[in-house]
Length: 83
Ligand SMILES: [Zn+2]
Ligand SMILES: [Zn+2]
Image 1: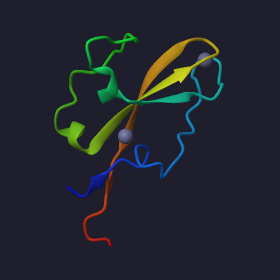
Image 2: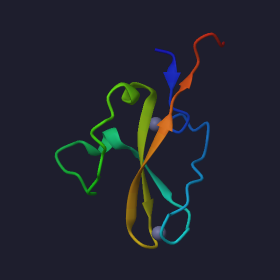
Image 3: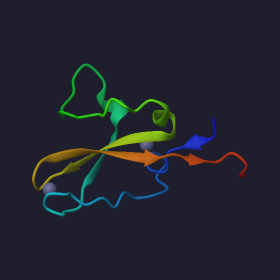
Image 4: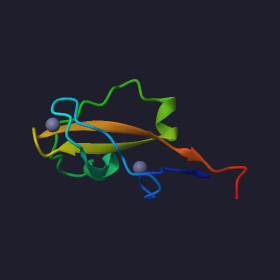
């Protein structure tokens, strides 16, 4: 696979603002990291993520100001055909 997540690879910095207080959100890592035995956040993941999931890397964003967590779907970069 030549799909990479630009966020996982540190190629881009998420510039997502909190929809509630407009403060900058902290990037808390991939959602995959939170599917272990415990889940610190209540997440609402839409169930219609079927074909899209293989080209999307879901990152968890967190606002320290109003304790809001939200999901940021990051489109993967297709590096095939490039060197
Ligand atoms: Zn990622
Ligand atoms: Zn906030």
